[in-house]
Amino acid sequence: MIGVFDSGIGGLTVARRLFEILPDYRLVYFGDTARVPYGGKSAQTVTRYAFEDADFLLRQGARLVVVACNTASAVALDALRKRLQVPVIGVIEPAVRAAVAASESGRIGVIGTRATIASGIYERMVTGMRPEALVIAEPAPLLVPLVEEDWLDQPETPSILRTYLAPLLARRVDTIILACTHYPLLRDMIARLVGEGVTLIDPAQETAAETHALIVRDQALRESLERSQDHLFFVSDLTPHFAAVAERFLARSIEGQLRKIDLP
Image (cartoon, rainbow, N blue to C red; front, side, top):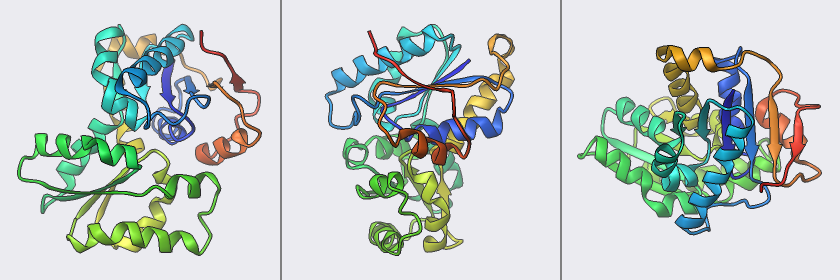
């Protein structure tokens, strides 16, 4: 199986892209909803949580782990790769590579949660790959609750987006990284607001593409992965509205596939 974990529900956008690009492979998802968000935790705690999340996926039979969480990707990815005996893919590196390749001017914008922007991880990775790049990063804290509350069609949403995007457009960015796994649900609206001259980078899409490329070139991994539509979704706390929100993120039913578990 392909294992995917996140601190909550946002990583389901990565699962959705994986379903699109790798429709024949079985997937197991774990959302650590009892301990969300990870962004306010210490690096040591986030790393411990990431180890526990990944170990759970491995016990379910995962042969590949996708870290569909910006905080865990920023803090724990290297430690996970040293610890686990299976390939590990995060959401930050694929998005940064895509942005660096797409930007003609080197002016790259980033919107994300406060914790992600405060970490500076996107600036460091972009300039590590392209030293002359100018990165303009802006926190967009209201977007996650807007997505989770399904306010995509409310008149307030484009107004809030314009406020967050204005500093990036004022600096003439030609590429914007949507640095939160909730944001792909806002992609069409953001595209209309920024216009055709700005390329949007969706980490969920880029992460799924990198996962696909790894499976294509690694025959042993490919042969070890289970082929099935019987996907599994686990959470550490099951709220009454989780299933409905999850199905909106995934654009598919998960009836009979969602379970609550307690991590040891």
